[in-house]
Image (cartoon, rainbow, N blue to C red; front, side, top):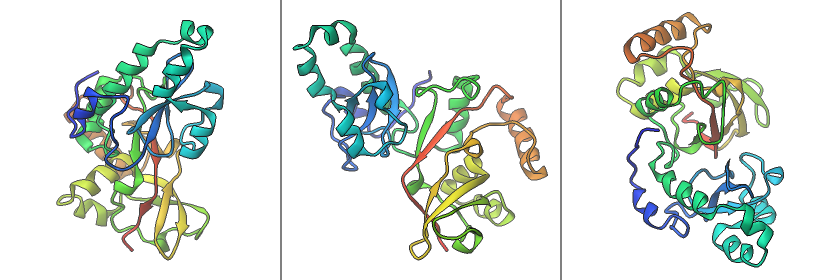
Length: 253
């Protein structure tokens, strides 16, 4: 895996008790076999949680995660009281993996276009063989949906509607808006759940439409862009990966 810079890198010096600047106390989750399982509803930052893999569900609420598991720092003390846990649990593996999380491009919840391309090149065949480690976790609250409005979500509040971010208006605006560029580059056509029409709050539905890939077969606009990226960046069908979107985004209109 390549090395990625992050403004939160300093937390690596104290990965277990590091302070989350956004206020979340826990999020990355590890199993009783010391393997990284994924995250709660709040992304990668915060103190590690340990729980049985059978109790874990990607994106589960922070509250449920604490009901099913416990802080890694607390688990360390408990494990010494139960030899069967201590024998089968690799403390160092979690410690070092958790300490490496700030090096990931998605640690701050946002992934730029170039970071997504680099991740794909560093993780070939990740889309065909997804793991919690080769998946990226992105905060919807940090995205820019451009000219998509509540009226574009045809099925209304409380329902899922397909929208196409890769439209001519957004293509023009993304030239001077790097956040919009990274958003539409990753998503294109996507399914949005309208949480509240009045506040314009939406959730991204995590399904096949959110796969980050460079396979042709969509609209002619997308195919043209994909072919250009393949040529310029050395991408092909093997370069894609899963993305899990968390949090609530907000439309401009």
